[in-house]
Every structure is written in C-alpha cells, then in structure tokens.
Length: 607
Figure 1 (cartoon, rainbow, N blue to C red):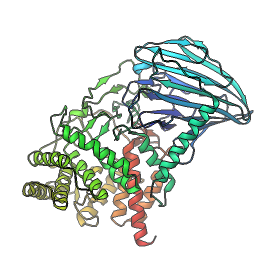
Figure 2 (cartoon, one colour):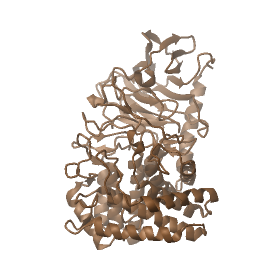
Figure 3 (cartoon, rainbow, N blue to C red):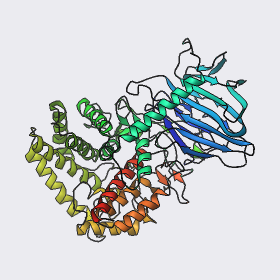
Figure 4 (spheres, helix red, strand yellow):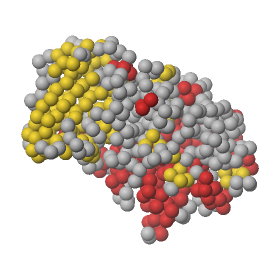
C-alpha cells in the first residue's frame, strides 16, 4: 500500500447516512460513523500511521483496476495476477435510510474469477480521528474492537481466520475460481449486543438488494441526453452525499484534503452549505428526482423557521446535517495531513461569516421547488421567508466575506449583490404568483436599487466586464451565474464582454480558476488549482450564450479530468491531479446543470 494514495485514486460507497473511500489498491482509508460529520474510524488519508485503514491487497506487478457496477454505488476493485484474477466488491447496504442509525455496515466480498489468488487483509481502526485507544476482543464468530471513542464488529464468511496483531487483526487466504469469502464491518454495536452469524446467503442478499436499490433509483431519472453515463454517475454521487434522514447534502465526504500539496487550505467539508444545497435543487429537478429536491426544501424551510444561528443572521452559511449550527473549528495536531499538508482542521470557522449571497440561492431553490410542484407555499414557511427578505432589505448593502469564504476581511462583492437581487426578484414573483402577503414595494425597490448599483459599481468600464468587488478590477468566476439567474440576458453585450475577459484571464485550456489571489489577496497562504465547479459553470455560460462549439469542447475536455470511476474532487492541479476534498458535491451538480443546458441548446439548433 502506498503511503498516500492520490486523492483521485478512490471510489465512494455509502448508505445515505455516511460514506467510505476505497483506494484503487483496495484500501478503505476514509470512513466516519455514524454520520458524515462524525469522528473517523479510518483516516489514513490524513495520517498514514495514525489514521487507521482496512486493507485488502494482492501481490501483483500489474496495477489493479477499479470500476463501479453500471448505475450503482457498488465498487469493484479487480486484481490481475500471474496466477489468476481476483476481485473485491465493496458496498454499504441501504437500510431504512430515512431513520438516523448508529449501526452501519461495510461489506467486502472477495472472489476469484480465474485461476487462484492470495489475498492479504488487515483491519486497523483508529477511532475519534485517531485520538482514542481501543482493544481487540477475538471471538468465535466475530472480532470486536471497542473503546471509548467507538466500537465495531468484524465478521468473516468463508475460509478466513483472523490473527491478532496488537489491537488490530490481519489474515491471509487463497481463493480458487468461484470460491467465496466476505468480511462485514459493523460500526456502532454495543459490547453486550449479541452478533448474529453472517452467512454467504446473507451477504449475497445484501449485495442484490443494494444493487437493485441503485438500479431502481437511477431509473427514476428522466435524463436521456448525450452524456447519460456521466450524468447518472454525478447524480448517484449527489445521492451518496445526502444525509437521508433530513435531506441535507454535504459538500464532500472528506475533511482536510489540501487545495495545494503542503499548503494550509485544508478545510472540513462534511457539512451542509445553504448555497450548495440550494443550487442542487435545480439539478435534481432537471433530472426528475423530485423527492430529493423537496426533501432539501423542507430542510431549508426548517432552518428559516428555526432562526437559530451562530452568526446572528437569519440563516447561517452552513450547518451540520441535522441542522445544528455549531461547527467549532479545531486543529488535529497529531495528524501530519495528506502528504504533509497541515494543519488538519475539523469543524469550520467560516460558519459565522456573513455571506449575503446565500439568501439568493435559498430563494431560487424555494421558487424552483414551488414552480415544479405547483403547490402554494405553506403559510408558516412563507412567513419565515418573508421575514428574511424584510431583514435583507436593510442588510443587503454592506460588505461581506463572499462566496469563496475568504479570510481577508469583508468587501463589497458583486456576486453577493447579484444574489441579493435574485432573492428579491424570486420573492416578488412568488408573492404575486401565489397571492402571498409581502411588502412588495420595499422588495421591488431593493431589487431595482441593487441592479442599478451593480451596473454602476460592479461593472468596470476599463475591463469591460463585471468584476469581483466594487472599486476593483479583479475578475471572478462566480459571476458566470449572472445570466442563469436572469440578471442579464446571456447575449447582453455587457455579459459577452465579461465572458471574453474571463476567457482571457481565468481560463486555461477550458479549465477555470475562481479568481487570481495575487490580484485580490484572500487572507490565506498558498495557491490553488483550477476550480472544477467553475469549469462546469463556464460550459453552461458558453452554451446559454450561443457558443456551442466552445461549450461542447470545454465540457468534453473537462470530463477527461474525472477519475477512473467518474468522480471529481474540488480542483484540478497544475499537472492534472485532483486536489481538495473528494468527491465534491458542488462539482457534480454543476456537471449535471452544464449537461442539461448544453443538451437544451444543442437540441434547439438541431446539432
């Protein structure tokens, strides 16, 4: 096993409450339980020695091959040896996902399709981010790992016997063609709970139910466009990153993975951002996944009504998956970080930032959900939204930290004003369409004032472009959303000029940087790669502006940067490697919206 597998050398499995990353060498080196935002059980991605892992390996000079079973979240790692072909099939059974559960199962099936193969296994859990000691208790039917920081039970099926290795276990076995073995790791079982034996029939049934669950879910999609495989994979990834009991998507499955190797931009992304979740509504509705879109709408409505935030504003930029606003940031000093990229942070101190754009994205999501369902917004929910917009009338014209969560102080960001405009615009539309009580005069005045202000102060006559912040000439890829929210037409001369300026300054062979930190210091050390979200937003902007040749080239080029399993991290590095937390939900939802926009525009012209 390499000390650190590349970020992109992983597949994702999950049960809609938590998830695990499996390297292309067959090692589980990231897994938190019982939720996405819980402490880790395996965290070798952040510290090879102290993080813990669960490895299944085969001695072979040929590299393994990893793939998903088509349209599922079942991951296959195939080992090609001189004596035969072996496979590890990884999945997490989806069992009553709507109910929060302490118990979660990771199933690993070992099989040989040709010849014979020797497998080596080792299970080394390290509970509570490696901070909690544990003991191992071997038993006749199972091995228990137990400690104050977590508990797990490891069961084996087939000719597999565990040897104790300190407080961990290891095993070796040789399987011939068509022979079967499996291991089931269950987290959260108590010391006293009896462990029911697991049989081969049990494992096969779990596999078939999991496979069928994903096949059934994917069939609900109405997407029949040109990029069906990639769109389906992106949709499955969004589903895997959603906490089913509340409908809240997390930004990524991981924490602490660097935006620059050795740099300090290492954040915890296992939480629900209002922005990311709100923008996912359009992507989900575009595919026909109405239940997921409406589930997030309900979660968002609960946050609006609760009004409990650390920041003191009506909404907080991010929450835990259950809506808890407390995300205190701390540094895990005992972890060395991915390939030495420290500090490793848990929690997120940006939670108390003022980012005014979230009110626009939230309003867009609620308007899209209402339009899709055709239902009149519930009175209590409307009153909560109306109260937020009344607050925003007095709050929109002030500096904030902006969409990129910079830590260099508050500024007058153009994107924040743009989304405040969208908040008032959608609020006015919904009030009129559904005859809801609202202070339409104030909302309309605020909307119009923002538009005039952005055109006067967010537009640079020197650059002939909309710029990142007032009194500055820096470009910002977040403004690729200007036409999609209806602020200007996608063929407006000001917009086309902005798009040209971005192509000259932010785009590198179809890959897009967020902004230039050297031109606009963000208070953070280090640099970063191109931002994959922005690369897909660029495709959508090109398509809507009628530049279909460019759009299709940029989209097809961007798809080549997906990893072997069709997944994307947050960024693409200077040598094509993936950087940042993985996989990132925002990138996958932008892939979907780019594909939908490109299909629509290409169909319109018959190309």
